[in-house]
Image 1 (tube, rainbow, N blue to C red):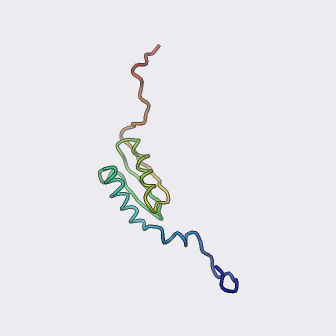
Image 2: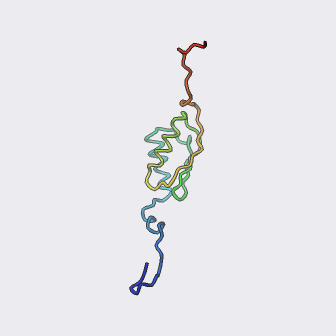
Image 3: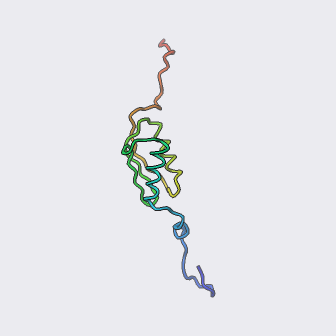
Amino acid sequence: MVDETGTLVGIVSRTDLLRPMLRRDDAIRDEIVDDVLGRTLRMTPGGVSVTVRDGVVSLSGRVEDRSTIVVVERLCQSVDGVVSVDQSLGYAVDDLAPVADPNRAAR
């Protein structure tokens, strides 16, 4: 920023411009827990732990199917205010593993 004489009086950073649009971490966490995990995916409470710090979502815990991990990640990324998603989720069933073809005979 410059004053009326053209003298530099301050600098506006990207953070300064984005700050009014950012959501509070607790609001982001509540939306993920209540809407994404609860209403949309109908997951039981406590299976996935959610923490949010400066818009970065961290997911830990366990889901039933391996394919659910990608869905959870993408839905969390779509929540307003989320900067990125880090996950360390485990799964009970690997539904993405290749299935053996029972019609294929060994030769």
